[in-house]
Length: 207
Length: 87
Image (cartoon, rainbow over all chains, first blue to last red; front, top):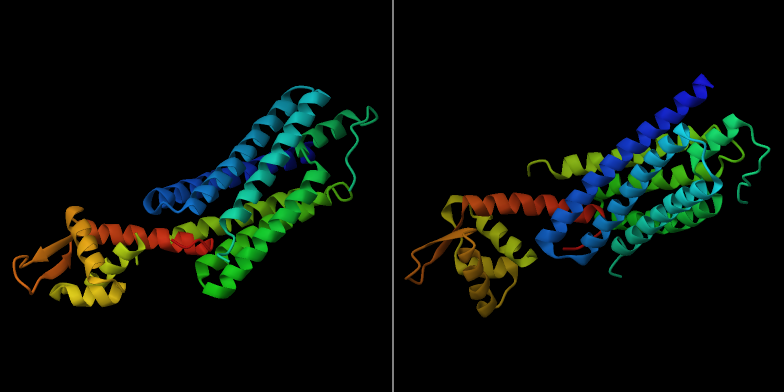
């Protein structure tokens, strides 16, 4: 139980850091939009804002479930809201970066208290994960095309970032079969956001 | 925005000697009318300064505000390019 709770807290820390980095990207994209008036930058900014809001919502929701016994209704609401916020964000990424050119987990009463707690903290809906993966594949392919065209190291960081986000969702979709993938998935997500952070730092350096 | 940045880069590339209208016109690929319009905009915003404004040998220099603007624009340009967004 100690180890499980430790893993849960680590995943929340990863999610929190990722959410903060997403907020920083939101700020940069918003600043770029104000300077240039390019609508795609506004869409990108909104996408990262929605993503960070979903992440913070998940952290708060998970803490809530850790403190109180979750009702099925609230659990379902938070899980779906989290999944939809991510999908909405990824759709916005797909729109803004476009070129100019399983089965559902059943919350039965047979789960033990610990399993219920762990499931509640995972907040995974496999159906939404599959949709997120499909949209992210489009985003990754667009990032790949952008990198192939520009050969810019900044584009490479974005490609790595989105690829790791995709990988995290692929791993998350497998959590039902192998719960060990959960923390690896969260780590992949954090590394993806770290890649975006490196891009921001390097892009902000003096010419 | 991109045109203004191209004009300012043309001026910056000339360093302390400054750039004349013809140099800026070719660098930013502009017509004479558009060049006049954008130069006025840059002067109004104090992003460039003008030497000998009453003669035919006008020379333009980048102001400190212009240099800072160009640095910020380059950061924004890199950020946008990273996501494949043209500005």
